[in-house]
Length: 260
Image 1: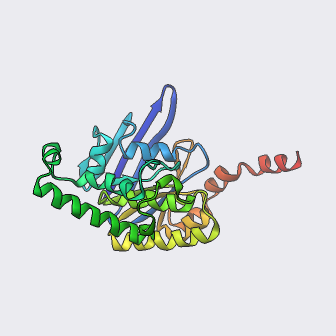
Image 2 (image 1 turned 180 degrees about the horizontal axis):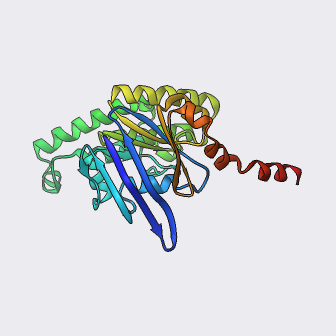
Image 3 (image 1 turned 90 degrees about the vertical axis):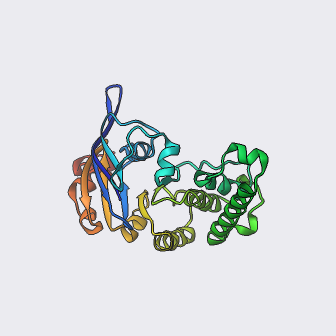
């Protein structure tokens, strides 16, 4: 579904990501993890057109995404959430979702100005779609409230609902559990599993909550300083000495730090 080969980017003399190879199958749920500054969000920015790669290839269902703008990549079928929530804070909950629905709109500006029958029909269909998504995320009763007024966990769920409104084939989730309490994380696990099944999605997940990653992901890629240091099933990743070192440091370093 989503494949990268030798993907990399440099900022000046700094190689932020290098040689990234991902292969996300249709319906797959993969994790992308690593310490702070490992290059995870930079990788998402490459996949969604925020950054143009210095090298390598990205393809969705065999179609190259290189050179496409973020809006074109969203239209192709890749959608994302952000580590720092980026809702339209002054807009209502439902208008946040409706804005994303317009990625699939067929009527243009001329039809919108004239309020043609086709445009009104499409607008009604988009509103029903937005309401259906809000109902799935239990946000429909708050549809007309300002998105900024929602509790933090609800804002996270609204951002996922907005991403789904673009009808993606691949959903990229950047730290979806950040700031959530234990009960909200339990609900998030269930939600991701349900969305994957109900929407036939492939999901690539960045997350610092290792319990969440190890429980729901089938395959995990680990980055450290922009380089892939391990890739495989969760059981293999948990015991990989390179992964343990990347997160905890060299044993002697950890001991010395503890003594200090």
